Amino acid sequence: MKTISENACFDGTQGVYSHASSACNCEMTFGLFLPREARDGPVPVLWYLSGLTCTHENAMTKAGAQTWAAEHGIAVVFPDTSPRGDDVADDEAYDLGKGAGFYVNATQNPWKPHFQMWDYIAEELPAVLADTFALDMERQGITGHSMGGHGALTLAMNLPGRFASVSAFAPIANPTASDWGRKQLSAYLGDDDAGWAKHDSTLLMQDKGFEGPILIDQGASDQFLDLLKPEALAQAIAAKRQQATFRMQSGYDHSYFFVSTFMEDHVAFHADALYAL
Amino acid sequence: MKTISENACFDGTQGVYSHASSACNCEMTFGLFLPREARDGPVPVLWYLSGLTCTHENAMTKAGAQTWAAEHGIAVVFPDTSPRGDDVADDEAYDLGKGAGFYVNATQNPWKPHFQMWDYIAEELPAVLADTFALDMERQGITGHSMGGHGALTLAMNLPGRFASVSAFAPIANPTASDWGRKQLSAYLGDDDAGWAKHDSTLLMQDKGFEGPILIDQGASDQFLDLLKPEALAQAIAAKRQQATFRMQSGYDHSYFFVSTFMEDHVAFHADALYAL
Image (cartoon, rainbow over all chains, first blue to last red):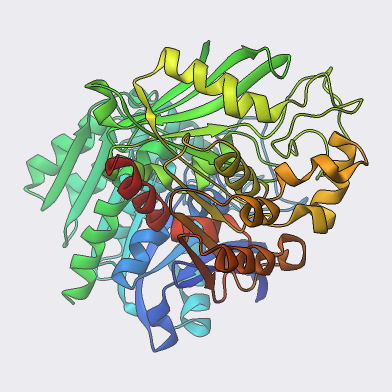
Protein backbone atom coordinates (compact mmCIF):
# COMPACT_ATOMS: atom_id res chain seq x y z
CA MET A 1 0.00 0.00 0.00
CA LYS A 2 1.40 3.37 -1.00
CA THR A 3 0.26 6.66 0.45
CA ILE A 4 -0.19 9.12 -2.41
CA SER A 5 -1.45 11.98 -0.26
CA GLU A 6 -3.12 12.74 3.05
CA ASN A 7 -4.84 16.05 3.73
CA ALA A 8 -6.50 17.21 6.91
CA CYS A 9 -10.18 17.66 6.08
CA PHE A 10 -13.14 18.37 8.38
CA ASP A 11 -11.12 17.34 11.40
CA GLY A 12 -10.40 13.97 9.76
CA THR A 13 -8.11 12.85 6.94
CA GLN A 14 -8.71 12.65 3.21
CA GLY A 15 -6.20 10.10 1.96
CA VAL A 16 -5.31 8.74 -1.46
CA TYR A 17 -3.63 5.35 -1.59
CA SER A 18 -2.58 2.84 -4.22
CA HIS A 19 -1.93 -0.87 -4.09
CA ALA A 20 -1.18 -3.80 -6.39
CA SER A 21 -4.56 -5.32 -7.27
CA SER A 22 -4.62 -9.03 -8.01
CA ALA A 23 -8.21 -8.81 -9.25
CA CYS A 24 -7.40 -6.12 -11.82
CA ASN A 25 -3.79 -7.17 -12.32
CA CYS A 26 -2.55 -3.59 -12.08
CA GLU A 27 -1.91 -0.83 -9.58
CA MET A 28 -5.21 0.60 -8.32
CA THR A 29 -5.76 3.95 -6.61
CA PHE A 30 -8.53 4.87 -4.19
CA GLY A 31 -9.53 7.76 -1.94
CA LEU A 32 -10.54 7.27 1.69
CA PHE A 33 -11.97 9.85 4.04
CA LEU A 34 -11.51 8.92 7.68
CA PRO A 35 -13.40 11.02 10.23
CA ARG A 36 -11.83 12.06 13.52
CA GLU A 37 -13.62 9.18 15.26
CA ALA A 38 -11.43 6.67 13.37
CA ARG A 39 -8.54 7.69 15.63
CA ASP A 40 -10.37 6.01 18.50
CA GLY A 41 -11.60 2.86 16.76
CA PRO A 42 -13.40 1.42 13.76
CA VAL A 43 -16.06 3.57 12.10
CA PRO A 44 -18.87 2.70 9.67
CA VAL A 45 -18.06 2.77 5.97
CA LEU A 46 -19.87 4.37 3.07
CA TRP A 47 -18.80 3.35 -0.44
CA TYR A 48 -19.09 5.95 -3.19
CA LEU A 49 -18.87 4.51 -6.71
CA SER A 50 -18.26 7.04 -9.46
CA GLY A 51 -19.61 7.38 -12.97
CA LEU A 52 -18.24 7.22 -16.50
CA THR A 53 -14.93 9.04 -17.12
CA CYS A 54 -14.30 9.50 -13.38
CA THR A 55 -11.32 8.38 -11.33
CA HIS A 56 -11.13 8.08 -7.55
CA GLU A 57 -10.71 11.85 -7.47
CA ASN A 58 -13.87 13.43 -8.88
CA ALA A 59 -16.27 12.79 -6.03
CA MET A 60 -13.51 13.21 -3.48
CA THR A 61 -13.04 16.83 -4.55
CA LYS A 62 -16.49 17.79 -5.85
CA ALA A 63 -19.29 15.92 -4.06
CA GLY A 64 -18.93 17.51 -0.63
CA ALA A 65 -19.34 14.11 1.04
CA GLN A 66 -16.70 14.75 3.69
CA THR A 67 -18.75 17.58 5.20
CA TRP A 68 -21.51 15.19 6.18
CA ALA A 69 -19.40 12.09 6.73
CA ALA A 70 -17.47 14.05 9.35
CA GLU A 71 -20.74 15.13 10.97
CA HIS A 72 -21.88 11.52 11.25
CA GLY A 73 -18.48 9.95 11.99
CA ILE A 74 -18.50 7.77 8.89
CA ALA A 75 -15.65 6.84 6.52
CA VAL A 76 -16.12 7.22 2.77
CA VAL A 77 -14.29 5.08 0.20
CA PHE A 78 -13.82 6.45 -3.32
CA PRO A 79 -12.62 3.64 -5.61
CA ASP A 80 -11.49 4.15 -9.18
CA THR A 81 -13.90 3.20 -11.98
CA SER A 82 -11.62 0.89 -13.96
CA PRO A 83 -8.18 -0.65 -14.11
CA ARG A 84 -5.43 1.72 -15.24
CA GLY A 85 -2.04 1.55 -16.88
CA ASP A 86 -0.33 1.41 -20.25
CA ASP A 87 -0.98 -2.31 -20.68
CA VAL A 88 -4.70 -2.02 -19.88
CA ALA A 89 -7.02 -2.21 -22.88
CA ASP A 90 -8.94 0.92 -23.78
CA ASP A 91 -11.37 2.28 -26.33
CA GLU A 92 -11.69 5.65 -27.99
CA ALA A 93 -15.21 6.03 -26.63
CA TYR A 94 -15.59 7.66 -23.20
CA ASP A 95 -18.05 4.95 -22.16
CA LEU A 96 -15.95 1.83 -22.72
CA GLY A 97 -12.59 0.78 -21.34
CA LYS A 98 -10.71 3.02 -18.95
CA GLY A 99 -13.03 5.07 -16.76
CA ALA A 100 -15.91 2.78 -17.71
CA GLY A 101 -15.47 -0.51 -15.90
CA PHE A 102 -19.22 -0.81 -15.25
CA TYR A 103 -18.54 -2.85 -12.09
CA VAL A 104 -18.50 -6.21 -13.88
CA ASN A 105 -16.00 -9.04 -14.33
CA ALA A 106 -15.15 -9.06 -18.04
CA THR A 107 -15.18 -12.48 -19.70
CA GLN A 108 -14.29 -11.17 -23.16
CA ASN A 109 -11.01 -10.05 -24.65
CA PRO A 110 -9.34 -7.61 -24.72
CA TRP A 111 -10.97 -6.69 -21.41
CA LYS A 112 -10.71 -9.93 -19.44
CA PRO A 113 -7.09 -9.60 -18.19
CA HIS A 114 -7.76 -6.43 -16.18
CA PHE A 115 -11.44 -5.46 -16.13
CA GLN A 116 -12.50 -7.40 -13.03
CA MET A 117 -14.09 -4.50 -11.23
CA TRP A 118 -16.83 -6.60 -9.61
CA ASP A 119 -14.31 -8.74 -7.78
CA TYR A 120 -12.21 -5.69 -7.01
CA ILE A 121 -15.05 -3.77 -5.35
CA ALA A 122 -16.86 -6.75 -3.84
CA GLU A 123 -13.89 -8.72 -2.55
CA GLU A 124 -10.39 -7.36 -2.90
CA LEU A 125 -10.71 -3.73 -1.86
CA PRO A 126 -12.87 -4.49 1.21
CA ALA A 127 -10.19 -6.92 2.40
CA VAL A 128 -7.45 -4.37 1.80
CA LEU A 129 -9.39 -1.70 3.67
CA ALA A 130 -10.24 -3.98 6.59
CA ASP A 131 -6.58 -4.94 6.96
CA THR A 132 -5.28 -1.39 6.89
CA PHE A 133 -7.72 1.12 8.35
CA ALA A 134 -9.96 1.55 11.37
CA LEU A 135 -13.15 0.52 9.56
CA ASP A 136 -16.09 -1.42 10.93
CA MET A 137 -16.81 -3.72 8.00
CA GLU A 138 -19.94 -4.99 9.77
CA ARG A 139 -21.47 -1.57 9.10
CA GLN A 140 -21.29 -0.73 5.40
CA GLY A 141 -23.51 1.32 3.13
CA ILE A 142 -23.05 2.01 -0.57
CA THR A 143 -23.93 4.82 -2.96
CA GLY A 144 -22.85 6.05 -6.35
CA HIS A 145 -23.54 8.30 -9.30
CA SER A 146 -24.68 7.27 -12.77
CA MET A 147 -22.60 4.18 -13.68
CA GLY A 148 -21.64 4.17 -10.00
CA GLY A 149 -25.29 4.22 -8.97
CA HIS A 150 -25.69 1.15 -11.15
CA GLY A 151 -22.71 -0.40 -9.37
CA ALA A 152 -24.05 0.44 -5.93
CA LEU A 153 -27.51 -0.99 -6.58
CA THR A 154 -26.28 -4.16 -8.27
CA LEU A 155 -23.68 -4.87 -5.60
CA ALA A 156 -26.19 -4.27 -2.81
CA MET A 157 -28.82 -6.57 -4.27
CA ASN A 158 -26.35 -9.30 -5.24
CA LEU A 159 -24.62 -9.39 -1.86
CA PRO A 160 -27.39 -9.79 0.74
CA GLY A 161 -26.21 -8.93 4.22
CA ARG A 162 -23.21 -6.92 3.04
CA PHE A 163 -24.74 -3.44 2.97
CA ALA A 164 -27.24 -2.06 5.45
CA SER A 165 -28.41 0.61 3.01
CA VAL A 166 -28.01 1.58 -0.61
CA SER A 167 -28.56 4.87 -2.39
CA ALA A 168 -27.90 6.28 -5.83
CA PHE A 169 -27.69 9.56 -7.70
CA ALA A 170 -29.09 9.28 -11.24
CA PRO A 171 -28.19 5.59 -11.59
CA ILE A 172 -28.06 3.72 -14.88
CA ALA A 173 -31.15 1.84 -13.83
CA ASN A 174 -31.95 -0.58 -16.61
CA PRO A 175 -28.77 -1.12 -18.65
CA THR A 176 -29.95 -4.25 -20.47
CA ALA A 177 -32.47 -2.01 -22.20
CA SER A 178 -30.20 1.00 -22.83
CA ASP A 179 -27.29 2.03 -25.02
CA TRP A 180 -25.55 2.76 -21.70
CA GLY A 181 -25.52 -0.91 -20.91
CA ARG A 182 -26.08 -3.14 -23.92
CA LYS A 183 -22.91 -1.81 -25.52
CA GLN A 184 -20.76 -2.33 -22.43
CA LEU A 185 -22.34 -5.58 -21.22
CA SER A 186 -21.89 -7.00 -24.71
CA ALA A 187 -18.26 -5.91 -24.86
CA TYR A 188 -17.33 -7.10 -21.37
CA LEU A 189 -19.63 -10.14 -20.96
CA GLY A 190 -20.35 -11.24 -24.52
CA ASP A 191 -23.44 -11.17 -26.66
CA ASP A 192 -25.32 -13.85 -24.75
CA ASP A 193 -27.44 -11.64 -22.55
CA ALA A 194 -28.48 -14.46 -20.22
CA GLY A 195 -25.71 -13.43 -17.81
CA TRP A 196 -26.53 -9.74 -17.89
CA ALA A 197 -29.42 -9.75 -15.42
CA LYS A 198 -27.06 -9.73 -12.44
CA HIS A 199 -25.93 -6.30 -13.65
CA ASP A 200 -29.31 -4.64 -14.13
CA SER A 201 -30.90 -2.95 -11.11
CA THR A 202 -34.39 -3.11 -12.53
CA LEU A 203 -34.17 -6.85 -13.23
CA LEU A 204 -32.58 -7.46 -9.82
CA MET A 205 -35.36 -5.49 -8.15
CA GLN A 206 -37.97 -7.57 -9.96
CA ASP A 207 -36.19 -10.76 -8.97
CA LYS A 208 -34.95 -10.25 -5.44
CA GLY A 209 -35.04 -6.66 -4.18
CA PHE A 210 -32.99 -5.42 -1.23
CA GLU A 211 -33.47 -6.23 2.43
CA GLY A 212 -32.76 -2.68 3.65
CA PRO A 213 -33.80 0.86 2.72
CA ILE A 214 -33.08 2.45 -0.66
CA LEU A 215 -32.79 6.15 -1.53
CA ILE A 216 -32.61 7.33 -5.14
CA ASP A 217 -32.38 10.89 -6.42
CA GLN A 218 -32.84 11.66 -10.10
CA GLY A 219 -32.70 15.10 -11.73
CA ALA A 220 -35.73 15.84 -13.88
CA SER A 221 -33.56 17.89 -16.24
CA ASP A 222 -30.85 15.24 -16.53
CA GLN A 223 -29.44 15.31 -20.05
CA PHE A 224 -29.09 11.51 -19.97
CA LEU A 225 -32.60 10.58 -18.83
CA ASP A 226 -33.24 8.44 -21.91
CA LEU A 227 -30.16 6.36 -21.17
CA LEU A 228 -30.70 6.09 -17.42
CA LYS A 229 -34.29 4.80 -17.56
CA PRO A 230 -35.31 5.70 -13.99
CA GLU A 231 -38.95 4.92 -14.81
CA ALA A 232 -38.15 1.22 -15.16
CA LEU A 233 -36.58 1.03 -11.72
CA ALA A 234 -39.28 3.18 -10.12
CA GLN A 235 -41.90 0.83 -11.51
CA ALA A 236 -40.02 -2.23 -10.28
CA ILE A 237 -39.56 -0.76 -6.79
CA ALA A 238 -43.26 -0.03 -6.46
CA ALA A 239 -44.26 -3.42 -7.88
CA LYS A 240 -41.91 -5.18 -5.45
CA ARG A 241 -43.23 -3.19 -2.46
CA GLN A 242 -39.55 -2.42 -1.79
CA GLN A 243 -38.74 -0.10 1.14
CA ALA A 244 -37.47 2.88 -0.84
CA THR A 245 -37.60 6.60 -1.48
CA PHE A 246 -37.39 7.64 -5.12
CA ARG A 247 -37.14 11.41 -5.62
CA MET A 248 -37.49 13.11 -8.99
CA GLN A 249 -35.77 16.46 -8.43
CA SER A 250 -37.13 19.27 -10.56
CA GLY A 251 -34.57 21.30 -12.48
CA TYR A 252 -31.48 19.26 -11.65
CA ASP A 253 -29.15 17.80 -14.27
CA HIS A 254 -26.52 15.03 -14.21
CA SER A 255 -23.64 17.10 -12.81
CA TYR A 256 -21.87 17.15 -9.48
CA PHE A 257 -23.87 20.29 -8.69
CA PHE A 258 -26.81 17.88 -8.50
CA VAL A 259 -24.87 15.28 -6.52
CA SER A 260 -23.50 17.76 -4.00
CA THR A 261 -26.93 19.29 -3.46
CA PHE A 262 -28.38 16.03 -2.17
CA MET A 263 -25.28 14.53 -0.58
CA GLU A 264 -26.31 15.65 2.90
CA ASP A 265 -29.51 13.63 2.64
CA HIS A 266 -27.72 10.55 1.36
CA VAL A 267 -25.08 10.49 4.06
CA ALA A 268 -27.75 11.04 6.72
CA PHE A 269 -29.80 8.23 5.21
CA HIS A 270 -26.87 5.82 5.42
CA ALA A 271 -25.94 7.02 8.92
CA ASP A 272 -29.44 6.20 10.12
CA ALA A 273 -29.13 2.66 8.78
CA LEU A 274 -25.55 2.09 9.90
CA TYR A 275 -26.02 3.33 13.45
CA ALA A 276 -29.20 1.25 13.80
CA LEU A 277 -27.14 -1.93 13.41
CA MET B 1 -22.76 38.63 -21.69
CA LYS B 2 -22.66 34.99 -22.73
CA THR B 3 -24.06 32.16 -20.66
CA ILE B 4 -21.53 29.33 -20.66
CA SER B 5 -23.52 27.06 -18.38
CA GLU B 6 -26.21 27.07 -15.72
CA ASN B 7 -26.73 24.15 -13.34
CA ALA B 8 -29.35 23.75 -10.65
CA CYS B 9 -27.48 23.63 -7.36
CA PHE B 10 -28.81 23.69 -3.78
CA ASP B 11 -32.17 24.96 -4.99
CA GLY B 12 -30.43 27.88 -6.70
CA THR B 13 -28.36 28.22 -9.86
CA GLN B 14 -24.63 27.88 -10.42
CA GLY B 15 -23.91 29.84 -13.57
CA VAL B 16 -20.80 30.50 -15.62
CA TYR B 17 -20.77 33.59 -17.83
CA SER B 18 -18.31 35.48 -20.00
CA HIS B 19 -18.18 39.04 -21.20
CA ALA B 20 -15.90 41.43 -23.06
CA SER B 21 -13.83 43.19 -20.41
CA SER B 22 -12.65 46.70 -21.17
CA ALA B 23 -10.38 46.71 -18.11
CA CYS B 24 -8.54 43.55 -19.16
CA ASN B 25 -9.06 44.05 -22.88
CA CYS B 26 -10.12 40.45 -23.38
CA GLU B 27 -13.02 38.08 -22.80
CA MET B 28 -13.37 37.30 -19.08
CA THR B 29 -15.21 34.37 -17.50
CA PHE B 30 -16.74 34.23 -14.05
CA GLY B 31 -18.92 31.91 -11.97
CA LEU B 32 -21.95 33.11 -10.04
CA PHE B 33 -24.04 31.16 -7.57
CA LEU B 34 -27.50 32.62 -7.11
CA PRO B 35 -29.57 31.22 -4.24
CA ARG B 36 -33.29 30.57 -4.58
CA GLU B 37 -34.02 33.90 -2.89
CA ALA B 38 -32.61 35.75 -5.92
CA ARG B 39 -35.77 34.80 -7.84
CA ASP B 40 -37.70 37.14 -5.56
CA GLY B 41 -35.30 40.07 -5.44
CA PRO B 42 -31.73 41.20 -4.85
CA VAL B 43 -29.60 39.15 -2.46
CA PRO B 44 -26.33 39.95 -0.65
CA VAL B 45 -23.10 39.16 -2.48
CA LEU B 46 -19.98 37.33 -1.33
CA TRP B 47 -16.90 37.59 -3.53
CA TYR B 48 -14.53 34.63 -3.60
CA LEU B 49 -11.11 35.42 -5.08
CA SER B 50 -9.02 32.40 -6.03
CA GLY B 51 -5.35 31.64 -5.71
CA LEU B 52 -2.42 31.05 -8.04
CA THR B 53 -3.08 28.75 -11.03
CA CYS B 54 -6.85 28.85 -10.49
CA THR B 55 -9.57 29.93 -12.88
CA HIS B 56 -13.18 30.83 -12.02
CA GLU B 57 -13.84 27.10 -11.76
CA ASN B 58 -11.72 25.71 -8.91
CA ALA B 59 -13.58 27.11 -5.93
CA MET B 60 -16.89 26.78 -7.74
CA THR B 61 -16.47 23.01 -7.87
CA LYS B 62 -14.30 22.28 -4.84
CA ALA B 63 -14.89 24.76 -2.00
CA GLY B 64 -18.43 23.74 -1.08
CA ALA B 65 -19.46 27.39 -0.77
CA GLN B 66 -22.85 26.87 -2.40
CA THR B 67 -23.97 24.61 0.45
CA TRP B 68 -23.75 27.45 2.93
CA ALA B 69 -24.55 30.33 0.58
CA ALA B 70 -27.86 28.62 -0.14
CA GLU B 71 -28.50 28.24 3.57
CA HIS B 72 -27.97 31.96 4.13
CA GLY B 73 -29.52 33.20 0.87
CA ILE B 74 -26.32 34.81 -0.37
CA ALA B 75 -24.87 34.96 -3.89
CA VAL B 76 -21.23 34.03 -4.47
CA VAL B 77 -19.13 35.46 -7.31
CA PHE B 78 -16.11 33.46 -8.53
CA PRO B 79 -13.97 35.69 -10.80
CA ASP B 80 -11.03 34.45 -12.81
CA THR B 81 -7.53 35.20 -11.51
CA SER B 82 -6.08 36.86 -14.62
CA PRO B 83 -6.81 37.92 -18.17
CA ARG B 84 -6.91 35.06 -20.69
CA GLY B 85 -6.40 34.53 -24.40
CA ASP B 86 -3.73 33.90 -26.99
CA ASP B 87 -2.66 37.55 -27.12
CA VAL B 88 -2.29 37.87 -23.35
CA ALA B 89 1.29 37.84 -22.06
CA ASP B 90 2.33 34.86 -19.99
CA ASP B 91 5.33 33.40 -18.20
CA GLU B 92 6.58 29.87 -17.80
CA ALA B 93 6.34 30.15 -14.03
CA TYR B 94 3.04 29.17 -12.40
CA ASP B 95 3.14 32.30 -10.24
CA LEU B 96 3.40 34.99 -12.91
CA GLY B 97 1.18 35.83 -15.85
CA LYS B 98 -1.95 33.81 -16.56
CA GLY B 99 -3.52 32.47 -13.39
CA ALA B 100 -1.44 34.89 -11.34
CA GLY B 101 -2.90 38.38 -11.78
CA PHE B 102 -2.30 39.24 -8.12
CA TYR B 103 -5.23 41.67 -8.19
CA VAL B 104 -3.15 44.66 -9.30
CA ASN B 105 -3.14 47.05 -12.26
CA ALA B 106 0.08 46.35 -14.14
CA THR B 107 2.06 49.41 -15.17
CA GLN B 108 4.88 47.46 -16.79
CA ASN B 109 5.16 45.72 -20.14
CA PRO B 110 4.40 43.09 -21.31
CA TRP B 111 1.67 42.94 -18.64
CA LYS B 112 0.13 46.40 -18.87
CA PRO B 113 -2.21 45.85 -21.87
CA HIS B 114 -4.30 43.16 -20.13
CA PHE B 115 -3.31 42.69 -16.48
CA GLN B 116 -5.66 45.25 -14.92
CA MET B 117 -7.23 42.90 -12.40
CA TRP B 118 -7.65 45.55 -9.71
CA ASP B 119 -9.89 47.64 -11.93
CA TYR B 120 -11.64 44.53 -13.16
CA ILE B 121 -12.57 43.28 -9.68
CA ALA B 122 -13.05 46.68 -8.03
CA GLU B 123 -14.95 48.45 -10.80
CA GLU B 124 -15.89 46.63 -13.97
CA LEU B 125 -17.20 43.29 -12.76
CA PRO B 126 -19.32 44.82 -9.97
CA ALA B 127 -20.99 47.06 -12.57
CA VAL B 128 -21.59 44.12 -14.89
CA LEU B 129 -23.08 42.07 -12.06
CA ALA B 130 -25.29 44.90 -10.81
CA ASP B 131 -26.66 45.43 -14.31
CA THR B 132 -27.44 41.79 -14.97
CA PHE B 133 -28.35 39.88 -11.82
CA ALA B 134 -30.56 40.25 -8.75
CA LEU B 135 -27.74 41.33 -6.46
CA ASP B 136 -27.87 43.84 -3.60
CA MET B 137 -24.61 45.70 -4.17
CA GLU B 138 -25.15 47.63 -0.92
CA ARG B 139 -24.45 44.36 0.91
CA GLN B 140 -21.12 42.88 -0.18
CA GLY B 141 -18.55 40.76 1.59
CA ILE B 142 -15.29 39.41 0.21
CA THR B 143 -13.12 36.37 0.83
CA GLY B 144 -10.41 34.46 -0.97
CA HIS B 145 -7.67 31.84 -0.79
CA SER B 146 -3.92 32.42 -0.88
CA MET B 147 -3.35 35.03 -3.64
CA GLY B 148 -7.12 35.52 -3.48
CA GLY B 149 -6.95 36.11 0.26
CA HIS B 150 -4.41 38.81 -0.51
CA GLY B 151 -6.81 40.24 -3.06
CA ALA B 152 -9.74 40.16 -0.66
CA LEU B 153 -7.88 41.87 2.16
CA THR B 154 -6.27 44.54 0.00
CA LEU B 155 -9.51 45.37 -1.81
CA ALA B 156 -11.43 45.56 1.46
CA MET B 157 -8.95 47.88 3.13
CA ASN B 158 -8.47 50.08 0.07
CA LEU B 159 -12.19 50.53 -0.60
CA PRO B 160 -13.72 51.71 2.69
CA GLY B 161 -17.47 51.29 2.72
CA ARG B 162 -17.54 48.77 -0.11
CA PHE B 163 -17.42 45.54 1.90
CA ALA B 164 -19.16 44.92 5.21
CA SER B 165 -16.83 42.05 6.06
CA VAL B 166 -13.65 40.44 4.80
CA SER B 167 -12.21 36.99 5.37
CA ALA B 168 -9.36 34.95 3.97
CA PHE B 169 -8.06 31.40 3.79
CA ALA B 170 -4.25 31.25 4.04
CA PRO B 171 -3.74 34.69 2.48
CA ILE B 172 -0.46 35.95 1.09
CA ALA B 173 -0.26 38.34 3.98
CA ASN B 174 2.92 40.34 3.53
CA PRO B 175 3.93 40.14 -0.15
CA THR B 176 6.37 43.05 -0.10
CA ALA B 177 8.52 40.87 2.17
CA SER B 178 8.04 37.55 0.35
CA ASP B 179 9.07 35.80 -2.85
CA TRP B 180 5.32 35.44 -3.40
CA GLY B 181 5.01 39.15 -3.83
CA ARG B 182 8.28 40.91 -4.56
CA LYS B 183 8.66 38.95 -7.79
CA GLN B 184 5.13 39.71 -8.99
CA LEU B 185 4.89 43.29 -7.70
CA SER B 186 8.20 44.03 -9.37
CA ALA B 187 7.09 42.50 -12.67
CA TYR B 188 3.66 44.15 -12.71
CA LEU B 189 4.36 47.45 -10.94
CA GLY B 190 8.07 48.01 -11.49
CA ASP B 191 11.03 47.99 -9.19
CA ASP B 192 10.12 51.16 -7.33
CA ASP B 193 8.46 49.63 -4.32
CA ALA B 194 6.93 52.91 -3.14
CA GLY B 195 3.67 51.95 -4.86
CA TRP B 196 3.56 48.43 -3.51
CA ALA B 197 2.13 49.18 -0.06
CA LYS B 198 -1.40 49.38 -1.42
CA HIS B 199 -1.05 45.71 -2.25
CA ASP B 200 0.25 44.41 1.06
CA SER B 201 -2.30 43.46 3.71
CA THR B 202 0.13 43.80 6.57
CA LEU B 203 1.18 47.31 5.52
CA LEU B 204 -2.46 48.29 4.93
CA MET B 205 -3.39 46.98 8.36
CA GLN B 206 -0.61 49.05 9.95
CA ASP B 207 -1.72 52.11 8.00
CA LYS B 208 -5.50 52.05 7.94
CA GLY B 209 -7.11 48.74 8.99
CA PHE B 210 -10.68 47.79 8.13
CA GLU B 211 -13.86 49.25 9.51
CA GLY B 212 -15.68 45.90 9.79
CA PRO B 213 -14.90 42.41 11.11
CA ILE B 214 -12.15 40.19 9.70
CA LEU B 215 -11.87 36.40 9.83
CA ILE B 216 -8.66 34.62 8.80
CA ASP B 217 -7.97 30.88 8.81
CA GLN B 218 -4.45 29.57 8.32
CA GLY B 219 -3.38 25.92 8.28
CA ALA B 220 -0.51 25.21 10.66
CA SER B 221 0.80 22.53 8.26
CA ASP B 222 0.54 24.74 5.19
CA GLN B 223 3.43 23.91 2.87
CA PHE B 224 3.70 27.60 1.90
CA LEU B 225 3.85 29.14 5.38
CA ASP B 226 7.19 30.79 4.74
CA LEU B 227 5.80 32.57 1.70
CA LEU B 228 2.46 33.53 3.24
CA LYS B 229 3.86 35.23 6.37
CA PRO B 230 0.72 35.05 8.52
CA GLU B 231 2.71 36.13 11.57
CA ALA B 232 3.25 39.59 10.08
CA LEU B 233 -0.46 40.15 9.57
CA ALA B 234 -1.38 38.66 12.94
CA GLN B 235 1.01 41.05 14.62
CA ALA B 236 -0.34 44.02 12.67
CA ILE B 237 -3.95 43.11 13.51
CA ALA B 238 -3.19 42.92 17.21
CA ALA B 239 -1.15 46.10 17.16
CA LYS B 240 -3.94 47.94 15.35
CA ARG B 241 -6.59 46.66 17.80
CA GLN B 242 -8.47 45.58 14.66
CA GLN B 243 -11.76 43.69 15.13
CA ALA B 244 -10.65 40.30 13.86
CA THR B 245 -10.47 36.57 14.44
CA PHE B 246 -7.24 34.90 13.37
CA ARG B 247 -7.31 31.11 13.63
CA MET B 248 -4.23 28.91 13.26
CA GLN B 249 -5.70 25.51 12.37
CA SER B 250 -3.62 22.58 13.51
CA GLY B 251 -2.86 19.94 10.88
CA TYR B 252 -4.34 21.71 7.87
CA ASP B 253 -2.43 22.41 4.66
CA HIS B 254 -2.97 24.81 1.74
CA SER B 255 -5.43 22.65 -0.22
CA TYR B 256 -9.13 22.95 -0.92
CA PHE B 257 -9.63 20.26 1.72
CA PHE B 258 -8.61 23.01 4.14
CA VAL B 259 -10.75 25.66 2.46
CA SER B 260 -13.86 23.48 2.31
CA THR B 261 -13.48 22.49 5.95
CA PHE B 262 -13.86 26.08 7.15
CA MET B 263 -16.12 27.44 4.42
CA GLU B 264 -19.23 27.04 6.58
CA ASP B 265 -17.74 29.38 9.19
CA HIS B 266 -16.69 31.95 6.61
CA VAL B 267 -20.06 32.12 4.89
CA ALA B 268 -21.82 32.38 8.27
CA PHE B 269 -19.39 35.13 9.28
CA HIS B 270 -20.22 37.16 6.18
CA ALA B 271 -23.94 36.45 6.52
CA ASP B 272 -23.89 37.90 10.02
CA ALA B 273 -22.29 41.09 8.76
CA LEU B 274 -24.38 41.39 5.59
CA TYR B 275 -27.73 40.84 7.28
CA ALA B 276 -26.83 43.31 10.02
CA LEU B 277 -26.72 46.12 7.44
